[in-house]
Image (cartoon, rainbow, N blue to C red; front, top):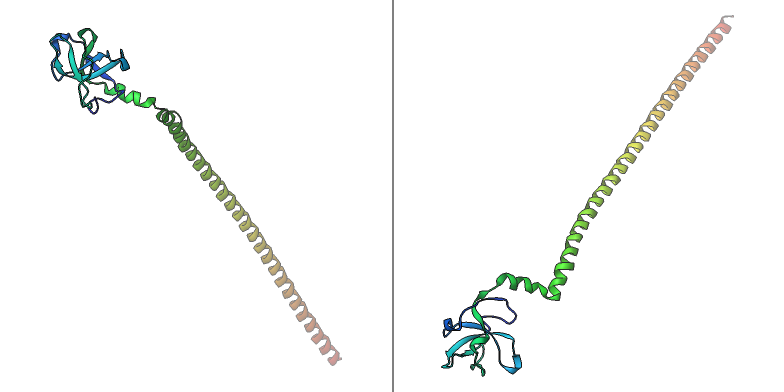
Length: 185
């Protein structure tokens, strides 16, 4: 019945009396064809025979079926596709099941793990920055201590030099005074 109905599709059929079947109706019936004996088939009615049997033909078939449909073999008249069941059955394919049950969960787990790794990387970077800041603060403190030490050393040296200069001045003053005293005597 392709392209009207595809093989393997789920459909709805209405159980009707054989007397209610008309030409151009799509009917579901159990086949008498030896190749597909007792399988459910859906074909379009092209004629109603005098004995009450139906001459049927598939939409994709060039000729009518060889075996007419007997009234007691009628299952019902096609009324539409069961789209929900067709959609659900489409997931019975192994590749689709693999996609649904393996690939998609792995994708979501990967995204979750990526977020976790990103958080961890941010925390590690924050720790590195903190350590770097602490080291810089320690170096700054050491530098300030050295500067203070150098200042103290410079001040002490200045004081010592100043005292030495003072002492030299005093010595030279004393020498001058001693020399004057000697001259006077």
